[in-house]
Image 1 (cartoon, helix red, strand yellow):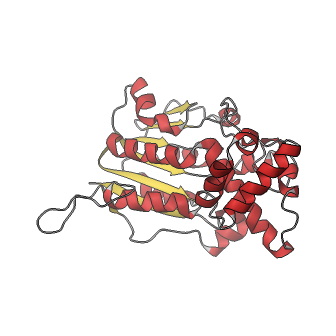
Image 2: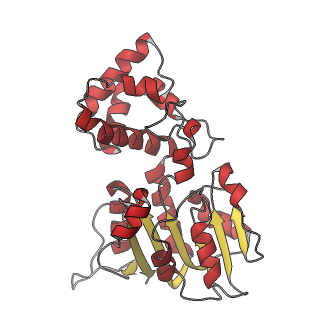
Length: 297
């Protein structure tokens, strides 16, 4: 299977409230969520799905109500306008890397396979993991490892990489992993997961792209339109949680004389929804998923 969609029924239950409505799936992938959305729509409903990965285009759906847009979802608003769409009833974003991208060893996303340092979700873009590791300054690397991987030893890691690349360039995932062979076995898996996450976020500018999408989503949603976001690590979830609360990513919103601030969304549930034990058992990649849903005020 290209990708086993996480929280499939729950996310589409939250999303689709108007069977005649216009909906957006920001992360088409294998089309699991898109097919479920289409199954809830009438003949008058429409679905626009986004995916920048050329591999995802092979999964397109033959349905007159469906349009697949080969773009990064950071171009959400302008892409929809090209189809004459200025407002929609709901937007779904299932963030992170698809199972297909992890399983395709040559893409370089997985810590389990030896592959070229790549990690691009859009293979047409210039920046890849190899350039990040071999060309970034030591301070840049340290910041990426600390902020995106939440690695406390970030400065030492950056120093080790810069030292080794002076001798020989670091071209594959195994080249990179060999630099840290001194790590105790019980810490290796978590460390590599955090390291690869940090590099991948930088390569794909994932947090900046997410911010851009969220701001645009609020603009294009109709009043009472729904935004459903499934995230897989705390960096994404914090951004989503804060934006759904007050429409901001940092700082404090302005309050009126009574201490109230204008809300961007009403939360459908006060706490994030997470997969149950059965789903996690069937799909281990669902383990870290958190879903939040907001209704535009």
